[in-house]
Length: 111
Image (cartoon, rainbow, N blue to C red; front, side, top):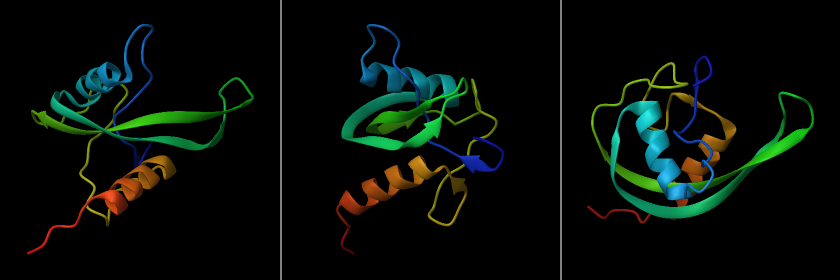
């Protein structure tokens, strides 16, 4: 979260750590929640950003749908947590695009 703009839990993999294991670790570090089931959804390449030491970069995301236990609480590098329902809170451009891609591919439920 940056001020009132939220993003999805995540971060880079450590050396010799799979992206799946990194997703599990980052979820725990950032929210205190324990992943029970992960389903890999897709890869996503974010927009171009300026680096803190100059130059530009793009984040490459591997996106997982996670079933987790626990109550989300701010952890490392996190100032707050919120649920996204389509009307708020404000999201980073990458988080917005990732959620949009997920929702457009998700089968709709019939009543």
